[in-house]
Length: 317
Image 1 (cartoon, rainbow, N blue to C red):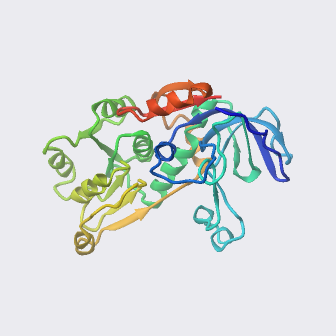
Image 2 (image 1 turned 90 degrees about the vertical axis):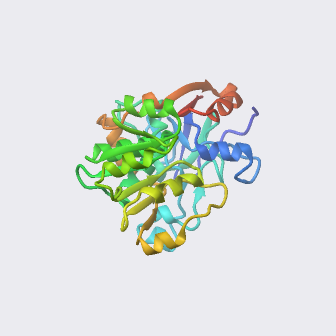
Image 3 (image 1 turned 45 degrees about the vertical axis):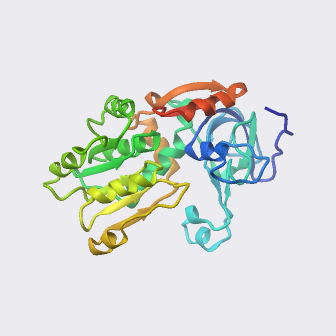
């Protein structure tokens, strides 16, 4: 814990009094040193808080808001061609610039979104990962009643599974942790598959007449998850990649070529869509909160978030 100057409000900025921040796998990787960043750095990019001061008229002090994870440059080719998620000169909140594990943060107004009255700050911390999950669906959409396999039963995997389920897919959640698979059932995801043992593959193939799902989402954060996805995806199918690996992985490249498998990456996504889905109750997030900590107990929060079986930890400021 330490003191830093209260961030200034430059033209076009909004200063947010932080109320809640989610701990993400990226935060844990930086904390452990497996992702190198410039120090000193305040972590945290799943941020919800209230407007304390704004240099633009559209945001009223006291409004509950969230901020996007990336501040885009607005000048590069990608920004000028309506693909700002691919900005080549973006600032990443809590990664390349100070984030939300603090009392205040100042960010550009164009990455701030007002939350509807139905949502509180804790729910707001799910907007960023849910927007990312929505982006996965939009880049690899399913058909009604189509079987979709989500490899990974952590927070992001369960959000992605709920998104596909909300759009009518028959979702199978694959994982090794029984507690998380039980949580999936509590969220209404009735098809869960434990990948411990040797029967899981048959269970997935039997649900698809032996050919495997056309869409498999990989959301484990472990290179072994990609191998699992390759084992079950249908020839001619899509593996939607959502993990960030902290080490290299060996995959069967020849199988990808010969079976005409598409690898589809996706990053951040549609924040307005995510907020709307939360507002309408299409996605359940409160059950995903394993524990809440105060900012003063931030180290304990990170230690707890790194335990097996934990879905999401929220730090209240």
